[in-house]
Length: 199
Length: 332
Image (cartoon, rainbow over the protein chains, first blue to last red):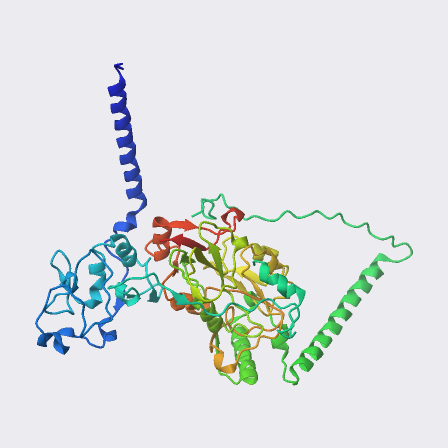
């Protein structure tokens, strides 16, 4: 059965949908003016290189070893490094420049040191990088109205095998006491109830 | 962000309905001269005042166990009526008292609100691990009592997929975050429409121009009405004399924030005003190992707080109460 206006109706529907989509996008762009801010607040980054005892890698060891890009299990050095991150299979040279491992390189060929590691991570984690640049993601110390201090991604996240952060919690608060100074080893009925009662 | 802001008008200050009490009929004063009665009442009031003052001074002197208690210490004015000279005297006296009691040299200061700044806090619920580092850093910074233990921050452990704080648990232990749980630290929300301030019968607590709700510890009568009025369980009462080891005392103190409180008064989070009013960050923010806490100026459009409110999914705890908190939770 042929419906003469079927195709036209589809077209109109599609057109309406496209228009509504574009309208949404426009609203979003207006509502988020600072997402594309070119001037993030002044910040300084805590240097990572000072925390790495074997830095600089080339001077310490790698100038005396021939670069080997063959993916393999490392047995002599870096034995604790487990590679569980990024596309599989890949090896050190995916992020490090093999001849100078203290230099990182992006897929677009740009190179930089460990203190700029966020530029490497941002290749894939663009939204997180944007949040980090604007101060929303990551620990930020210093002052709230002046220069702030940040840490690069690798200060908190293990770049070779990133895992969710797990920490040991500090002790829970004291349970409310029914009578001040009463011995702790004599729990009253009120204390027992407190265990069940939420705040 | 709530549409109801005090600036755009729809969020007028809410007052609780007050029950109208009918005035009791005056007792019959047959046979007594009204003029004389007034004089009698006036005389009695004067007499009671004198007796009260004398008793107060005696009690104060006996409580400290020394005769050096000054009039100024026990009967000084409300913070807002203190002149600069009064403050200098009072702060020196308080520093001396702390030295006598704990043997620690402390510095009591009174930083003033910064013109045009309104403080706000944002906490990332996606990254908070519930490790309680903020809770203990806060206690250390603010000289809160260690026994009985008092913490301004309460970290709630909630089931994922629920926002029901009534079913939360803040006595959890061990490694965090636990599977299927998330963590919501709760502290004073520094409301723009604070119910605690409305509840105080003696105006010992008020909201400062930079948005921080403070307590004059020497004016507080300890009635705990504000504690009952706060929907965020943010106020704490000193049931006993606060006990802190001298080595644990933070010597950088603010008169309205972290000076050592006496027994019988209310205290609460002040966004570390002795730090934040001089440009530093609150202690809880600096202690957070995952960077879940963000602090800044709500009036500055380039601050992180404003960026978070503009770009993230922001959650306001108990928004329906109209308290207009300056503490925002977000997911990011």
